[in-house]
Length: 216
Image (cartoon, rainbow, N blue to C red; front, side):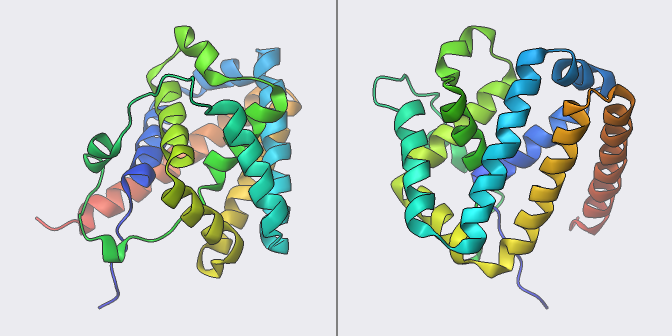
């Protein structure tokens, strides 16, 4: 039998957040993304940040990659910021297993890009907690957890640059970011809704298959 991959708490938070978002109606997030000019600006920067980080990854330019992430970390997560409190004790609750030997490193490109985008926009998410929603707090929380854990951040950097076993997944993510950002950039409301419902259908099928394979 093949080896079972055990995902970390941070990976499971990302999965749960995705499932929560796609449990809503398509028009809710279509309106938030397309009708809000600030959101479109942030999506555009996110796509730029992700693309530039991905280029550094495939070039294995560790010096530039590391320096860029550290600048973003120091801007967003300096010590005067009050933590979100997603500490080790809380994150352990999101683990599906305690077998650390089977945990697979992850580049966490989605989180690295998010923090890099905040830095380049000059936006600090801690200043916007008054308008927080549960998905926003979780996103900030897992970003904070990653960037303030030296060991986990280093593992993420090494995986992003040198782990070829996950490069295909990072490429798929890169392509998806380009696709979503183009739809939002063009203000294509119907295209957004169609893309959103396609992902919903995919997730429903994937969850159904996973449930059917789960042990009783």
